[in-house]
Image (cartoon, rainbow, N blue to C red; front, side, top):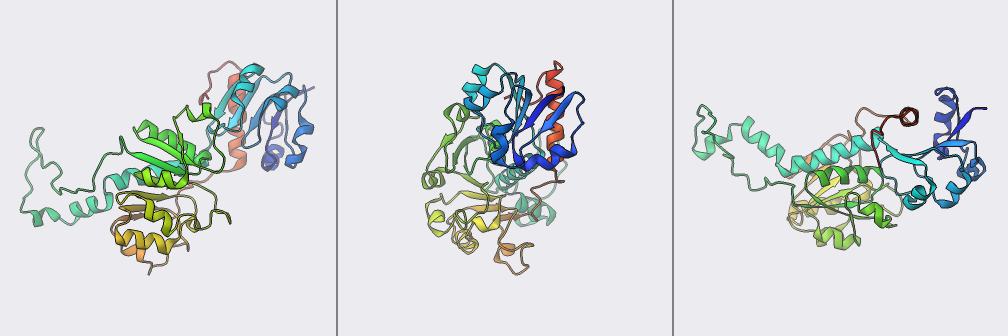
Length: 332
C-alpha cells in the first residue's frame, strides 16, 4: 500500500489530482472542501503539506505515523510549534514564488524611495549639475563629486521603522527582508500571531493607529474585502509622520485614493510607492502622474507569475529531499 501525503488545503485539490503519481510510492490526498479535512487524518499519512489549514495538537494526534510536516510558505503561524515539537515529526517550510515576488517589489519600492530614485536619475540624465555651478571632472579613487545633488530626501533604511498592515505570506516575506536590512518591523492584523512566531524575525504587534503614527515606512499587504475597503483614509493619513512613506502592493481599493493624493500634496506624508490603484491601468489624467514624490509601477508585483500546481510540486520535491536525508532548503 502506498504511503500518503496529505495536502491540507482544499484549494489545492486540482493540483493534487494533476500531480498524482508524481512521487513514486506516495499517494497524494487532499480534501475537496475544508469540512472533509478531518476525515483524511489517519495513520497512513506520513507527509503533511499545509498552507492555511490550522495544524494543532488535535490534528497531529491522529497522524500517528507522520514523518514530516511542511508549511507551504515561510509564514507558519497556522502550525502549533509546541505541538509539532512534542509530536516528534520533522518540520520545515517551503518557499512560495508568488508572495516572494510581491515582497521583492515592496522592498524595491522602499529602497527606491529611500534613494529618491526618480529624482536622482532625472538629475543625472538632465545634467542638473549645470544649475549648481559645477563641471564634470575625471573621477579617481580619492577624488569624487560625492552626492553633488545634495538631495535631502536620500536616506538609509537601516534603523528605520517599517509598519506592515496585514501579515500573511507576503507581509512575512517582506518582514524577513526588511529585518535583514536593519529595519525594525511592526505589524497590525485582526488576529495577533503566536508570541514564539513573532520572535523569529522579530515582529512587534501594534494597534493600527499607533503603528501608523510610529512608522517611517508603511506597507499595505491585506486582501481587498468589504472590511478593508478604504481602510487607509484621511484620518489615518493625519496620524502618520510627515516624513512617512506609504507602500501599496495589495489592492488600490484598500486606500482612499483622493485622501492619499491630498496627503501627498499637503505634505502630510513624504511620498508613496504604488503598484496598485483604484482604476488599472492608472488613468493618464490621474494627479498621481504629476507628483514627483511617488513611484508608480504597472501592477508588476506578481513577477513572472506562478501556479498552485507549481508550488505544490516544489513542496513535494522538498518532501522527497528531506525524507531522503538532505537538509531543508528553507528551515523553520
